[in-house]
Image (cartoon, rainbow, N blue to C red):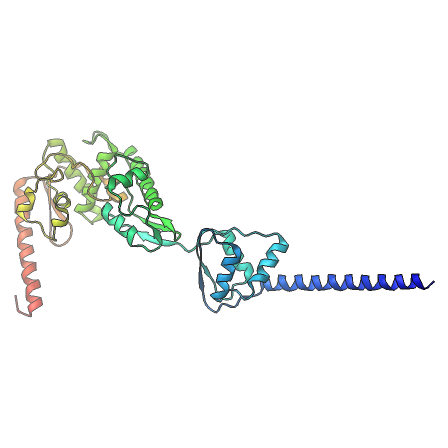
Length: 355
């Protein structure tokens, strides 16, 4: 009869061990769950980069070395037990101070990568856009060293000239984005904005295509920074186009000069041999001369109805508009006198002399 007693004792011991193991497991799970939601060790914001091909273990280990996680293996075990497999978008993440592992996993799940901003100002050239992309350390240079033709082909627009085709704006992107991706977004935005304003154009414009409106908008963009003048300047250019007059736009000459332009136009510059020189050639230049903004696009297709044929800078911001050449010449002489006066005053101020 001793054998049943012995068997019963073994059963009770096994049961006790099982209960102990279950309690230990429950305690361990409770500790893991508590650790998962408890505030983390970081005392300040920690920036973590997730690279292509990184595993969860690698990222957690990196965060431990940066002071954002104290027990990465415990977090990894808890996620495995709960069946959670967080999706990690490539990019940079800012881990807030005292962020718990749960907070960090939520950042990954929501894809809250830190976005970089690149601003392309209205009136910038395509070359300046490329230079800004090349200078940004968070942009992957996939097009560096390629010609304009090669870049346009890579974007899926072979044979197109790039100038004017990209919308000037502030573009937000995650670090590691390629220059090609940003250019594609800017191209698509300019195409959409141009198509929209072209549908809203005035009737009987001396423009045969949306591309010609884009060219005209680029001239308007470079001629003035005064918002209220854009449509009036567009009206002057439209009037001259209708009459077959040369546009005589200084910015087109500056564009033609390229690196030979050093901040001031001279009379001899107006004779530069280039299809962009609107002092020599009638009509619009062959391509835009910059990346025009939305206001200039709208002005190009909805110009003011005016009888003006000329405009000249006032020297104090803005322009004076004229209907006749005689009036224009008077304003031009006044502008030249003002320029000389300003230069003398600046020179006197620099030397300390009384003008």
